[in-house]
Image (cartoon, rainbow, N blue to C red; front, top):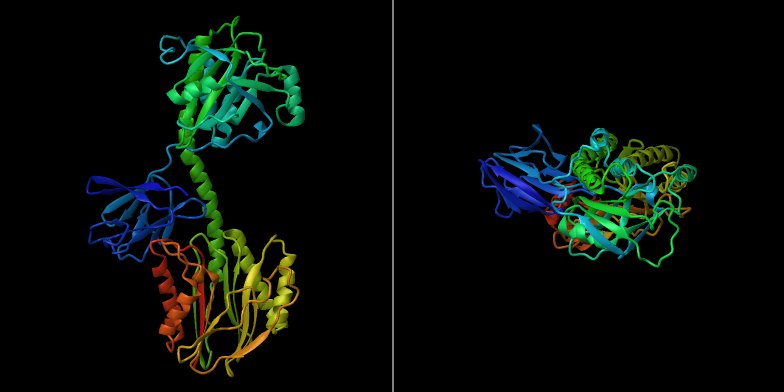
Length: 560
C-alpha cells in the first residue's frame, strides 16, 4: 500500500510529513515518528495506519485530551483525504490522490486495436486552437457538459464520453491508458472505453452479442500517442495508412482521408489516460480544426468531472464498507466473552482485542452446571461481516451441541460436519474446546488445528499441552481425538490465539512462542488477570509503531 503525506497545521504554521501505511505514531515523546511539542498532546497520542481495505485509520492511544474527527472524540476512525483531525492544538489532514484511476469498461474486452508506426502528418497542435471558433458545436458541448454533470460514478465517465464523441458513421472514439513519461509504450495500450460510429449493421451486431463485434477494429498511431504523452497537450494528425497488415475494418475506411485527435485526460503517478478520436475529414460542415477545438474542450470537461467524482467515489466506497463493518462490530460486541461467576478454586481472565476492521477470533466461556465450565477459543479465516456471522453461527452450534453431548471430541465432530455444509461457503475454523471440572481441576479437551495452550507450573516450568494433530473444523477431518489433563494447584493454563505469536515488530520479527514462554516465566505465580494483562501489554509494546495486525485473544485459568 502506498505512502501518503500528512499536513500538520499548528499556530498558523504548516508542515508535511510522510506516513507509513503500516503505522506512524504521533505524540510528544521524542521517540514518536512525528513529534508534537505541546503539553496538550500525550507522549504517545495517536497512531495512523492503513487498513486492509485501503482506508487511513486514526487510532487514539489512550490520550488524556483525546483525538477528534469532525468534532467527535474517537477511539479509532477511518478518515478521508482532506478531513480534519484535531489533536490538542494542532489540525491534521491526509493529502488525497491527485486523481482517481478509472476502471476499464467491461464491454471493451474484445475490442480489436492495432498500434502502428504509420506515417502521420501533424496538422494541429500546441496553440493551434487559439483562434478557432467554437460556434459550430455549442449545442453538442452543452449537451455533453450537462450529461457529465449528472454522473455519480467514475466508471460511467469514459464510456459516456466515447459514445457522445463518436456520433458520426465510421468514427471511433476510445480512451487508452499508457504508462507515464519515461516508460516504454506497450505494443497494445489498455483500452478503457471505446465506441464506434454506428451504422445499421454494427448496431444490430452489438445488440445481439452484448459487446462490439470482433471484426470491428481501429488503428492507433504510436507517434501520436507518444507525442501527446510527452508534451501533455492535445494534437491532431492526418492519418496516412501504409501498413501491410491485413485487417477487416468495417468502420474505418483506410483509403479516405482521416484525422486522429488525441488529448490527455489527466494522469496519476504511473499512468496517463488519453482520449483518442479517429474520424473521416473533408466534405463535412465542421472543419477538422473546429472538431479539434471541440474535442479539446470536451477533454477539459472530462478531466474536471474526473477530479470531482474522485471524492464521491471514495465516500461511496467508504460508506458501504463502514456500514458493513459496523454491523459486524455490533455482532462481535454481543458475542464478547465474559467470565462466569462462581468458579470456586479457580481464577479466570479473558483478554479479547479484535482488530479495528473486525477479525475472526472466537472466544466463549459458559457454565454447563455448578462444577463444569465449557470454554472455547478459535479463529475463523476472514474479516468483516462474513467472519462475524460465522463466529455467531459457531457460538450457537457449540453451545447447543455441548448441551446434548458434553464430550468435547464428539461435539467438535458434530460442529465440523455442520460447518462443512453451512450456507457460509468455505468457512473453516481452528478451535481449542475444553471442559473444566472446577472441583478436581480435570480438563477434557480437543484441539482442532489451534495453537497449543501452555501450562505454567508454580516453579516457572512451562510445557505445551499436547499439540494440534487434528484438522480444523469444517475441513476433511471426520473425528477429533479427546484428551484429558489435570491442572495442579498453583499452576496456570494460558491459551492464546495465533495472532499473539504472529504479531510482527517494525523490523519484521515475530513475537513467537519462545518470547511468550519467557514472558510467562516472569509472571509465574501471579493471578489470572495480571498474567492476561502482561501478555496483552507485551504484544502491544512489541509491535510499535505498527498497528495491530490480527485479533489478539488470551484466556488464562489459575488453580488455587
